[in-house]
Length: 280
Image (tube, rainbow, N blue to C red; front, top):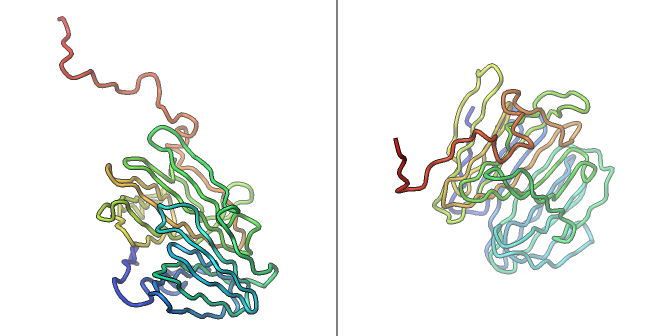
């Protein structure tokens, strides 16, 4: 199965991932782009939906509830607005100017009400350190949906993210969750790229994919660290879904020691200054 879905450059629907196309149980992902005045309408059916406004201004509806949202210029221009839609609800978006938005969905029972998530609701965390520093913007944490989780991650030029490499493909209470997962990428400048390694303990899967602006990477199993090419800042929308959605994950055993040791050890390689001479 392919690991990367490339975004279409035209049309309303730019990317689509279904449980059937991905070969997993829960998560669906759709990427849409609308021109000024265009509308999108959907029905959640037997699924819960997270609508994340990537860019632009929009009027949002869930049944008879309405919100008018002034969004960001692009994903590098601040925190998001998002809409949580429980099962059995009609929802709609009308664009006021060009708009891009993502939809993540998973089967649910309807235990939670609809709600608008504003930038003030998004908790921001700086994770890691040194050249593995990144920003995590929490859109939907455990308890905020029945099966969905959602964060936005910003990785500065040349930095690593999702590090130490971790996985969540086997359920073990308090240790590891079993989750479907996508990474939807944007780069600044847009001609950049990131690398994402996908690998399992037995190396039956061991691949490196090139993620470009607009690409969506499917993480079906295994560890999945990311590095942004120097000169290019990376963003990814991270949507996950499972029966027991938590942030529990298992670090790659040979690299777990890095957590809390971001600066490296005392013997870390240090290059001499250019032009420095040594006496023999």
